Image 1 (tube, rainbow, N blue to C red):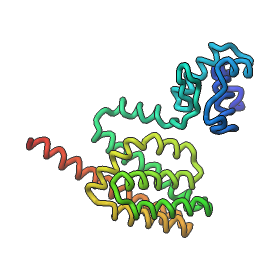
Image 2 (tube, rainbow, N blue to C red; image 1 turned 120 degrees about the vertical axis):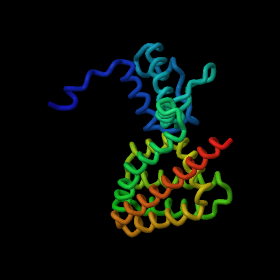
Image 3 (tube, helix red, strand yellow; image 1 turned 135 degrees about the vertical axis):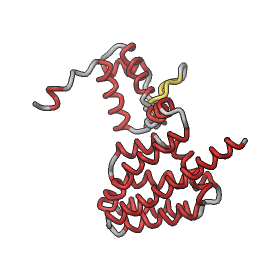
Length: 239
């Protein structure tokens, strides 16, 4: 039995969502990112305006569109927002979110490093080198944190896995909290050293070394986070 035969038929609203998202993929941010009006979309797609209105609302919830009442419908890149919000609701305790984030990263990122070591293109390697130089030259904590986050995202891009890239984007806000914690504990130099080892393994096309370097980096970060949270707990207890 084919997948097509077991999938339920798409509703009209779902089909309009697919057509609009397809148009966005094909045209990108043409017209400065603004879609045609609701009326024009309805005419172009051959559906009613209420159907278009419901479809654009769904795409807004998914982070692809932003509806500005009285102005228009703008294409945005916030696909990561729904998952990020769900994580905060599901795990309200920051310390527990950080612990589970580290677990998730250990499950995902060594595998991405392995694939990147096999698949990274010249352009991917250039982007990773530029990022590493940016991290080494970071003068503020904010610059260091953003470069750190981007390095891990670039590895997912080099691995060619859009789902994992989106997952890392979705966890970026929590990742900033994690990086801030490890930065305070270990400083920027440790991240520069660890990233350099991961990059060297990817450049040398040595998948298992890339896995080992990434695991070492994430496990060290997990220890720094655990220590920082323990110290924070002691501080609160003595207050």
